[in-house]
Amino acid sequence: ELKVEQNPLFLSMQEGKNYTIYCNYSTTSDRLYWYRQDPGKSLESLFVLLSNGAVKQEGRLMASLDTKARLSTLHITAAVHDLSATYFCAVDMSRGSQGNLIFGKGTKLSVKP
Amino acid sequence: ETGVTQSPTHLIKTRGQQVTLRCSSQSGHNTVSWYQQALGQGPQFIFQYYREEENGRGNFPPRFSGLQFPNYSSELNVNALELDDSALYLCASSRPGTSGGARDNEQFFGPGTRLTVL
View 1: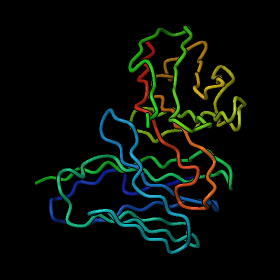
View 2 (view 1 turned 30 degrees about the vertical axis):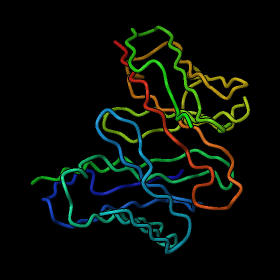
View 3 (view 1 turned 90 degrees about the vertical axis):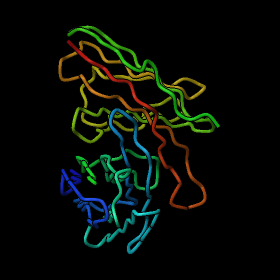
View 4 (view 1 turned 45 degrees about the vertical axis):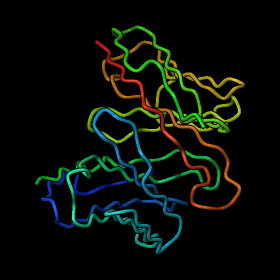
């Protein structure tokens, strides 16, 4: 059974600081996603990572994937209050078809002035 | 291009009742997946419909059932509601990708239906 583990589950940061969220998964997968969720809202897709060594960046967020280690990271640079949200990683189990996503428990990020 | 829509937004039911949630897929998408998100947890896969057929199911009992219609919209039905069924129910639509790129098969999520079971 595939397990997806994120850590930390809660993260309180000061504005301007850097930090990394980790996502470990237990079985080989085709692709990994990072989502953002604001309170009471749906999921917003941030990154899709396909291959080993993939790195994607958008603004202050950068995601990477190491398929050999079954590890993805979401790095936050110079955090700002607007980044406060819950971040989920999700692993696609479909193996080429349109599959189901297995989500981690999420990391609740709070950025304080 | 219209995004994924869900109705209703909120719903309150009592234990033992039945509920139907609805999802309209994004234009051009033929696949709908349903997820249950309990408070403070990540979404859990319930099932997926592709071209009106169930195409995969997570670890949910048979009282969770679904339909997909010819226009690719979908319903999630839950019978004999239990208190633990209280959650945000998300649907996501997608379509087969052909380019081999990262965005192939990407699922786009709707705003969700918040179900409370009393």
